Image (cartoon, rainbow, N blue to C red; front, side, top):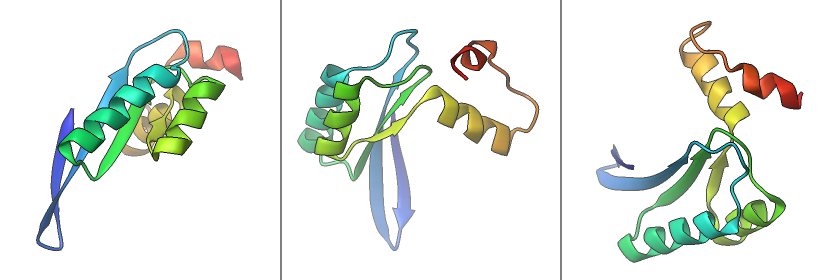
Length: 95
């Protein structure tokens, strides 16, 4: 997913990689996302997952300046913008 927005008369493009995984996202998808970001010169890259990230995935995201949105963060955004409309029982298990 590629998002474009106009900021100070400049088009800023962000690439999103979305994963609907039960398992945690490791470093390989983060590395591929970084490669796409660099190849196409996107301003930002964000990896979104319904699960979480492995230690290696988090390290790769830090190394390559990739933003990470895990399932809890995504649900928080949904709750903020659409209060009471989204609920995922699976995330309660990890609490």
